[in-house]
Image (cartoon, rainbow, N blue to C red):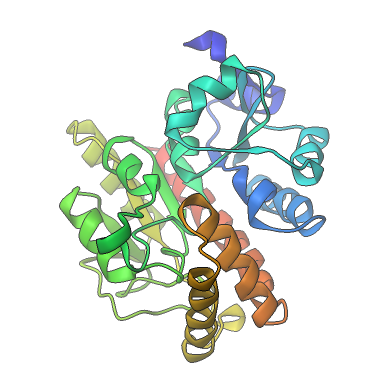
Amino acid sequence: MKQYLSFSEEVKEAKLAGKPIVALESTIISHGMPYPQNVETARIVEDIIRENGAVPATIAIIDGKIKIGLSDEELELFGKSSGVAKVSRRDIGYLIATKQLGATTVAATMICAELAEIPIFVTGGIGGVHRGAEATMDISADLEELAKTNVAVVCAGAKSILDLGLTMEYLETKGVPVIGYETDVLPAFYTRTSDVELTIRADEPGVIAESLKAKWDLKIDGGAVIANPIPEEHAMPASEINAVIAKALQEADEKGIHGKDVTPFLLGKVKELTAGKSLEANIELVKHNARVGTAIAKAYQNL
């Protein structure tokens, strides 16, 4: 297994020194935001993690290796390159064998983070059950990964383009804890609230860290969702974003867009229809998740 992993010097040193490490995905760079905001955001998020006392490990597939921690040049490469493969569980072996550039999704980043023994991972929002999935069976691989891979995902809830109720039902069936950080309801990415109530709330990073440690010490496999609402000052009104999403969904349906192409199309359409406000919100929520995720990683490392 070790022959497939390549650690950056910064991450290697952090491991030797016993410092907390926070995993980051690379799809957000290649497929989640336009250039140059994608690379700028990636660098800012990494710096936030460093400033708050941990080490960032952005994960990607490069030249037949799973890279744990990217250099500035590699971040730029992923930000500018077209045709970068979007990596989920099913793609990892093939992309390593063919030495293609691969940007890891939530699911793939979880797998790689567990291989690298990094239990805390920060992202924007998780995938989930798509609207109309009762007919299409369009369910993100992120949910199945959360059911079996021992990594906690700090996020602003599930992307609001999804069916949030069905996403929570799926996670509940799979035994995945969804912990609301300072919230009793599931945040919906661009907005702080939704109609979905949570059964677990924690107001301290230490409580979350202890919950994760107890779960994994007891061999209860699977990850956890740490649902961290976007800060109030950057949140979008629910009525505005819901109207925009409805319009974007209708257009996707009319154009016959489905499968893995749905999410990037919808996010791009939402950005266009909100005159860029959704991209600003996306950037701010990732930064906020990095601060909270770092606090949890530090608390977990100290246990």
